[in-house]
Amino acid sequence: MTTDTILPGPTRPGILRQVRTWWGPHALSQALFIAALGLLIAILASNTLATMARIGITPGFGFLWRSANFEIGEGIIPFRAGDPYFRAILVGLLNTIKVAALGCVFTTILGVILGVAGLSGNLLLATLVRWYIEAIRNTPLLLQLFFWIALAKSFPPPRAAISAFDCVFLTNRGVFVPKVNLVEANAWTWWLIAVLAAAFVVGLWWLRRKDQLTLRRFALAFGAAILGIALVRIGSHGRFSAELPVLAGFNIRGGASLTPEFAALLAGLTVKFSAAIAEIVRAGIQSVSQGQWEAARTLGMRDGQIMRLIVLPQALRVLTPLTTSSYLDLTKDSSLAVAIGYPDLVNVINTTANTTGRSFEALAILIGLYLTLNLTVSAAMNLYNRRVALRGQAR
Image 1 (tube, rainbow, N blue to C red):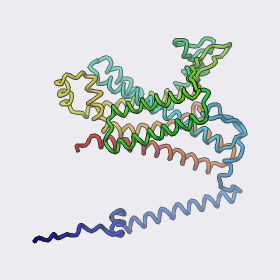
Image 2 (image 1 turned 45 degrees about the horizontal axis):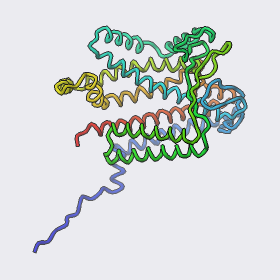
Image 3 (image 1 turned 90 degrees about the vertical axis):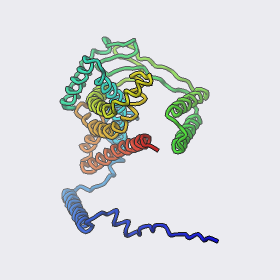
Image 4 (image 1 turned 180 degrees about the vertical axis):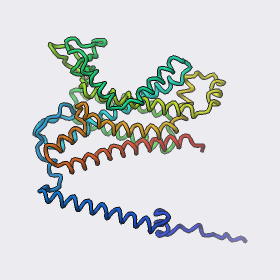
């Protein structure tokens, strides 16, 4: 007869031990430093409030609900004089998000193309890419924005617009492109689309956690979901309508228009940061050993397939952290839009501070919003980076 002896497992550290491990060494000196820093901040805050009270300024954010007495020339949501200040700030925030998001997308596309082209066997192409990167990286962004806004303003008037296929027009009033409209939608349609989209996202998340979904199946499922949502949208008495810009009188009517300021800002950010992305892509590709290329060629794969299926997936572990820094810099440098007149967040906040006299509160709002934007971008890219790193580990 044998008896089994159950040995106790390792004891978990107590709460005090966990706190000491988290706090780190030199606990007393760190506590004194934090206390001194907190005291300094409290003294500065007290002096600031006392100074504001002495000159008759009462701090607060009540001005956000007062009526703004200025117009905003461009925005995703409508705004006119008389709307509250918080809506004006929301318009500026959405304008910043729009140009930053589009800038990240176009910068990535152009940067990857330039990075791959710079490593091509074509000496002329590689040399041109190198000159482009050096010229862009060693020129201030503000100077480039001045160049792009001057170029946008130098386009001919609508009557003599530069046309491409009679559907894209370049004028000194902006860039006009075709637009797709979705009209005649029932209210329940949008709820159905929202439910389908939520179910699709939850399903993909569950499948990815169970390791039951490959990248190709993910793409197929995504395409099928988009097609299904489109069919539901059309079947509910909705329809698509293409709207082309046309010359009417002394202006161009219809389509979607990009103002000269927005087009110049987007072009400047894309060109500036595509050079940085190109260098990141070049470094990431060169970090993959030459043996990977040789092994793939022995299997009969072409260079394009090797780059797409073998090299770039491995290079992502090097590319993603550096690309995150470029995205953050692009989001922050979009604040230079104030120099060319684009109504971004900084521009609207400056106008709000000047018209209300609430410079301290406006600055606090500006810092908080930019901090939130950058932390959101950083969190999303860090999440993607962890997934890339996990996919590259051996199991």
